[in-house]
Length: 391
Image (cartoon, rainbow, N blue to C red):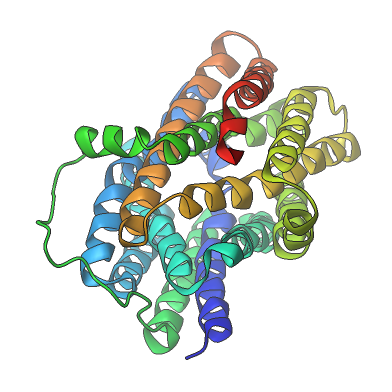
């Protein structure tokens, strides 16, 4: 199978899976708030447990995939994801909903393996474009998933869960039939590690100058954005009076803009501009978008602001992921991308917990201002340290 066909298949596998994920994004916080009377702070924990499991599991899956291949890991995690959405449909308490999100987090840990799959089949020069496909799949999943989730919520939140489960199972069938193994040279002379979080290995990877600096940059960016996980739906519902369907439209805007940037423009941008300029531009868009959300005023105003945010993330995700991958050795792609995904997941744990706490106890605008502030700090950090990547 040629490279183009392999990229298309991994793209469609991720897209179908993320379509199911996107269905629950806009409705999970409002479902927890309206149907189960869960507090804003507790909603932060429900969002965070998904990323906590990714933080724990991603490096393990990355190491497994370096040894046994990418395909079996992707297949098993798709089945776990499908099961998690079925459990969501039967959730009638915080505990059951928590278990559902925990399993979804385990299933969602396959993203690092998918990134390693792309790294296997692309040259270092093509890496940004390849990683952009992951972002485009996310973006398209966030276009159609939330729109579909908002519509399905009119027929009941349980129906949304069943449909999300169907899409993840469909991704499993598609991958089982069409996805071929990408890993040619497997690691044979290493022992499998079952450590929940291999601190020694993580510190070793972070000590690689260019790799470590890129991972730290990605961590701060993800934390800044993760402050709005959960709180964006809540501010839409409680502050602006948006319906589930309108919240789905807003997430659709984020996904559409992100997909356009990562699926179409990122290759043009990386050919014309240096990584330094792209990172700074992405951070500026992200900062303005995050800080402006509480002051959007109405549906149109919020849509404009989140479009700026989506431009920023659309630029940053493929560029920084490409930086991490390019500076990694070929035989450790899975392990290093697994550590990067794991630390990004840690940022997605800390962000929602802080965001939920700040929203409930400090002020509705504080999670978004926090995200903008840390993005500004990241710009300073990059200007001081990250230019070393080009030397």
